[in-house]
Image 1 (cartoon, helix red, strand yellow):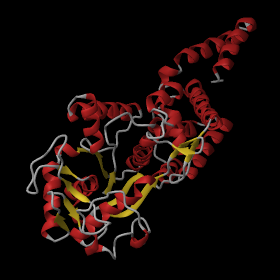
Image 2 (image 1 turned 60 degrees about the vertical axis):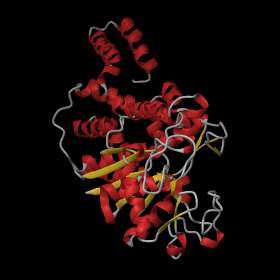
Image 3 (image 1 turned 30 degrees about the vertical axis):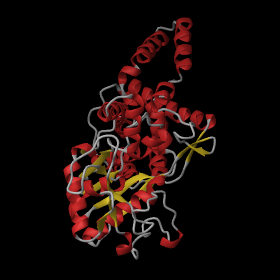
Image 4 (image 1 turned 180 degrees about the vertical axis):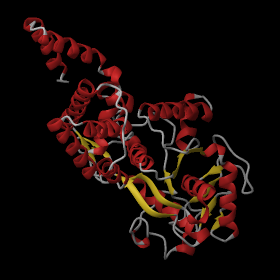
Length: 410
């Protein structure tokens, strides 16, 4: 069984389209794995308690739960629109406070964590300095750290448990407080997968340091092995060459993007780029993606009018297996090449096997493009047009033909 963990959102405001890239990417890849019969377990966390959530709750004079639940529901709705259905376990941090406390206790008992003067619990990086930096490829002496405190023994140490004076507090053996961000994910991986960790740990490229570095070092301190066999991180989505950032205000909200372009364009945005490469949003890029989408729609319309809307009799075959194997291995370029080869062969021959391969692939990856209800109006127009041509009513036939051409489907 393939074991995967993907870092999830901190639910304190609306995400931007870059925040959805990792989970959408892995969902598409795991859809391919599922088609191929590969079993998997994907754990995805929701950080529903954090300084940002606490600060927003104070600003708006509401509870942290009201903030986190609002944005968690919005996040789930976005996943639903994207047809993301491969997450096997969603874990909220607030549902796992006890799990995280137990994890911190294990570190403290092994002298991998220590208590500061104000009940903060810090991870002891000095105990593991030979290993620290292996994830991000950095040398400890050259690292820069954002978490400043005079309470730390060493500059690289980070909080496992924070003693807080504002916002929600949880009881623990260390005192009232809440978990540190870097401990959530590794505690959840330990909960689901134990000392062996995961096969793949995913997330955004911006999480490499310090988050992934700090996750790994905690797992290593407990189990003397890395938390994952492989790190697979997605590149950023940029706007006008600059990384989208809530702090900069240069963001595109997913719902705005979906309303304007549709969810399939977002998936194409991901599938036409190298996984680890940044994507630079531009009008030209969107236009190119719409051309690809229109090609798929035109092909599906041709399949429906030539072979009917009930494409029964699909058989697994070498060609479609190769398409999904490429996608399962994150080789998006090969996936696109093989799918386009099927479309070219179909356009040349109108063969039912190519039609079934295309329909099956798109029904899994781009289901709205294979929904016959989106084509019914023009399928009916096409049928009437064929009938008029047979009856040699060319004047009326030309009117319908023009409608078909204007639709872009014929």
